[in-house]
Image 1: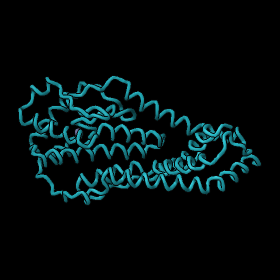
Image 2: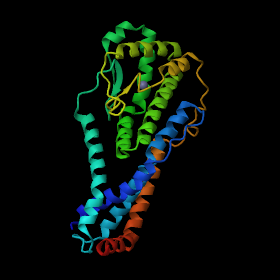
Image 3: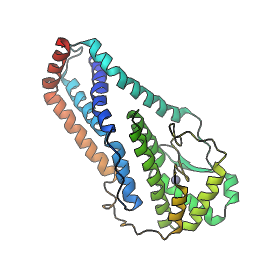
Length: 298
Ligand SMILES: [Zn+2]
């Protein structure tokens, strides 16, 4: 069998076998902390079940670097292909849904931040005319916070990670909980940038009224088509409005309190993947060839 085809099958099989049990991990309610910290923690929790799949993939790539093409080991082709098919179908479904967002028509929302690489704020002029200047300013600050953090890209990636954990409902619960905390965090950031909580609450209510007629994807489908909106997917609009009308909670404000920055997390991930790649180069054959022999004799 060709090396690259075998590598793909092994990544699907071992990656799926590692990720699916981890997707069953229960969702632990986050302790009462600032939305900024809670959002970072919830974001990392979304990726914990997927991370081992990347590590296994890097380890297998390390093995493939030293393996001749085609692979000469004896193994049961049928068993390997058959065992990989369920995970291949899940990956294909996730990829198609992610691609659909990129090529599909954008969801029409009164105000949202769209664009994966260069986020831009879209503001329905009819909504802008219906709002006071202070309300518009508050709504724009909320969307600017989404744009600063590249939330459309993060939502798109998070939905992709959630779809890879299909069909377990806990993965979607984690995703929806993160979306809700994300809105709280962006509300607080907008207020710390000068937006009034009362004005932002008024803008949220006006947007919610206007959004009633806008068709929304169901809870099982794509929530916002990758866009970060003023309303988000908040299931508790009342709780959000109450938060906005209350004084801005004191945030620790330091980067250390918010946990790892995206740059630090990516650097750690790169180190982890390079380590897995090196281990694959050094010990890949010692583990995979007995596995091939086992499938051959089974
Ligand atoms: Zn929002």
